[in-house]
Image (tube, rainbow, N blue to C red):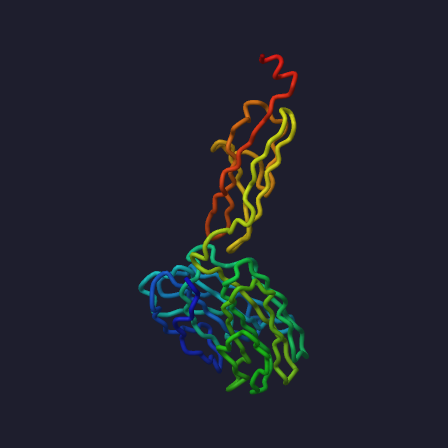
Length: 314
């Protein structure tokens, strides 16, 4: 199922300062990803919490400006239930800024974040900020990006977005907070994904955060090279290998010999020394990633008795 943007809550301008901000939003369906994206400023802003009217189970990824402590934020809740009607941010001090609520279908319903968030900051005076590179493990990831600038100019951002789609682009209107947010749905690429944020007044801290999310049912690992049959003499090592490509997340391997676990978490299995009891056994490998598991075809292990063993058995 492909990821799609299926809803958005209107951007909110907290001009004048507030200690909490509630954005009304009713999702279109259960099971989707709900994200809040924006940036905020405030003296000693510190931590920001996010919750909806049904739960506080939100994950917050943010970056803080090095001089003034303003933040860029991407917060999210996966596999959303019914009954949500609003999302609320709570600040430790009076804050000001912009945010939207974004809804995406087709995102994994558990462990959806693909790797660590990528954050970047630049101290005042700054007019550009490199976001840093975000490299995904899935090729159909959702990438969310947010940036802020602590500046008093009411000027539009001039970031070259490339394959990203802009959501917010606002300056310091009515003593608020310059904010830019964007998203991208990858198409056959793991990146790296990056932006160079540009806010031309250039007398501000700048901060940004990028977060990637895996697609739901993106499949399972693809096995490129199956284990092959191996024939060895008794006492020699039997080596089996497999090659696979992830559909999302890191690969893990579980080898089996006649259905029993053997070996280590590796793309190579070595059985040494082989014995005659290994003869005729079936070797398989289960390869797993964050989306599922693919089991290899079976490879036959043949162990030939040495001349001495054959004479003794005769």
